[in-house]
Length: 292
Image (cartoon, rainbow, N blue to C red; front, side, top):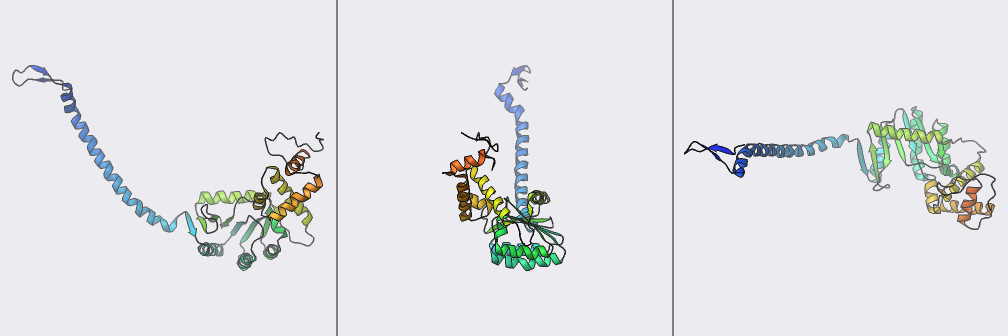
């Protein structure tokens, strides 16, 4: 440990102060540590310089890219959809689509059908009473496309050939979108679409469609959400119908049940088994049970 050293004058061993001995034996170790620290710092500097080069090289082929601007999004969508060779999956939440958008999409989708591209589109039930959307659906289904509707859809989605997907951006849904090419993410989105497709109802275009049954289905959807405590505006947004339609459904149901408030109406809906009550309410919704 360097605590004892021979004396140059007498040749006998003498004690060395511990701090001096410690300094002597730790110097080689500290030099090694210092050298390694210099090497580590040099490696970090070198690799940090390469980070910019790597990102620049990846920019042209990113697996998830942002599109900013409605015109940029429209152009990218048009390019991807036009290049479809086998399948186009589309999920459109909300109510009926704008006539201008439908007029723009119709010739494109008819061309895809003529090329043999399988098209499957999901809407919400509310489009079944929207004239322009019905006209569009009638023409594309006649060309071979498939259309179904569901009570609710989780998000807007377009998938081309199961290789590229378009989804809204969180930051600005109206002016930003994400283009996803990551195989794992695209596969997840396709499976989510397939799940929604399986539980959706086919939209058959023929005279005498059961609109009364459809209207009743929408009313039940409104009532289910009402029982959970959602306000009319949130219900309208979630189901893709107008605020006026929600109010009409609520009013008609209230008249049928004879309820004097939304709270009473929600309670009666639950206890009569018309809709399932939210979990944890303590309401036993057994049909036919009299409540005192």
